[in-house]
Structure formats: C-alpha cells, structure tokens
Length: 330
Image (cartoon, rainbow, N blue to C red; front, side):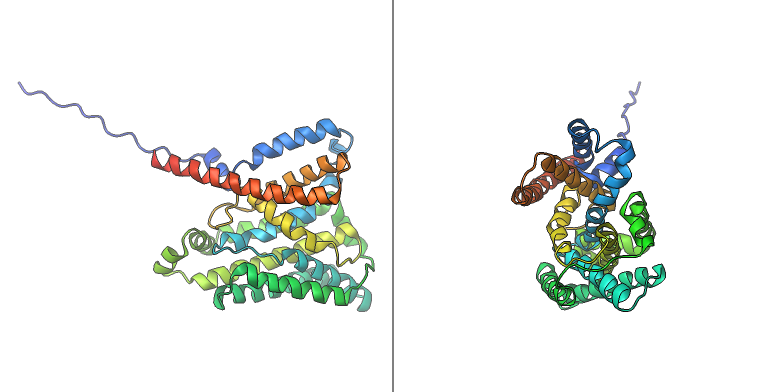
C-alpha cells in the first residue's frame, strides 16, 4: 500500500491593489491632508466653508502648479531638482504682462498661452541640455538658470506694474482648476506613452536602463522640457492670481514646491511618485500656511516651517522605502 504525499501548492503572491498603488505614489500625504483639512475647518470654519473652496483653490493654484512642474525632472533621477521653477514662473509673468500685454498690446489667449508654454519649454530645454548632455549636476545647472532668470526679470521689471485681461483674471478663482486640469491632462497623455516607463526606469536605476538600451540623456532632457512647460502654465496661474507683474513673488515658490513634492511621496532620488502626490503635498503646505497665518506668525516662522517640512518629508520617504522593501521581501 503506497501512501500518496499530499503537498499543497504554494499560494500565489498577492497582487498589489489600488491602496498599495496609491501608497506608492502619495505616501503619507493623504492622511496628512485629511488631518490638516479637519484642523483648518475647525479653526476657521468661515474661510473653509464650501462656498469659499473656489477662492481657496485659486489662492493655492500657483503653489500646486509649481509642485506639479517640479515633479517630472525629479522623477528622472540623478538628483534632478530644478530650482529654477520659481524664477521661470516669474519670468513668464514679466514677459506676459510687461512685454506682450503692456508693450505690444497683445491680449489674445492663444498668443499669451502659447508664449508661456514656449518660454517654459525653451528654458526647460536649456536646463535639460546642461544636466543631461553637459552632465553638470542638476542643482548647479538649474541654480545658474535661477540666477540668470531673476536678473533678467528684475531688469525687465524693476517694480510691480501692469494689469491682465479679464479672461486671464477668471483663472484666479474656481476656474483655476482649468490650467491645473490641463497639466494633469498632458501628464495623462505622457503616462500612456512608452516614454513614461523609460522615465521611471531611468529614475529608478539609470545604469540598468542604459544597459537595457534606453537613451538615458534624452529621457532626462525631455523631463526638463516637460518641467519647463508645466512651469510656464504655473506662471500664468500666478499672473492670474496677482493680476499684474511682480518680479519678487515667484522665486519664493522654489523651496515650497520642492517641499511639497517630497511631502507628496515623490522620491527625490527619482523613479517613484507622481503628480497626484505632488498636488496633495502642495495642498498640505497651503493648509499649513493657513493655520500659521491664523495665529499671525511672521514670515520668518513660515520659512522655518518650510525647511522643517522638507526634512520631515524626506524622513517620511525613507520610512516609506523601508516599508516597501519589507513588503517585497515577504
């Protein structure tokens, strides 16, 4: 009589679900967003009433746009932090108001939007060429662009001036969702191209991607061009919000945008995260600003808060990396 051995087949590995996919792209940001939203509604229920959400979105739109613009270059890896996003927004603001509207009298949406996108793409191409082909460290290359853009903008616009057409002012309120949606729509299209997988592979491990035949410099170059295009659109959102041209506002968005991206679960090392997390991180920072402003803290305290947020966000990203690593080892 022979005994048959009853060996059970190994259970299949669990397939990552939607929650895990969201976690990989956004990290702790959604939970923080919920806490901050509840806190703001509790502390200032009038300002955060549903009827005011459109106005709040308009106030937050340039920050969200700056965070979205910073993301593609970071995803490309090799420390691809573009610190010129803020000055590029200010440069677009100055060119649109001072040159196109005031000097040339051009107020057509087609002209202004096209100019903003082309300016952004051109500056992004310069950054991409320096970082990807000349192989200057990205933060150094974009810091050079940062200084050049600030200098040119202050030369063009030594003091605040001008006004914007009515159609552009509409994007300072609830309709600010339109340019934000345009950025997400462009990203949605990019994600459906083979380029997106190449970008994430390059950001995760550029040596492995190069060995597999990926044109790593070109992939990174395009990521800076995309960042520039998004920054051009963000510059229009800033122009709509302030309703004029001011060379001193936009550069402040640089540090805040990078903090928002890190807070949104985007790895500053590249290869992980997305625009959704960056947007959530930007909203979180806007809500933190609202809480601190409610208590009448000084701008110096706000700067301390931005730096603290950046450090905390990097620590949270490290914790997320460890959790994911342990999950993969199971």
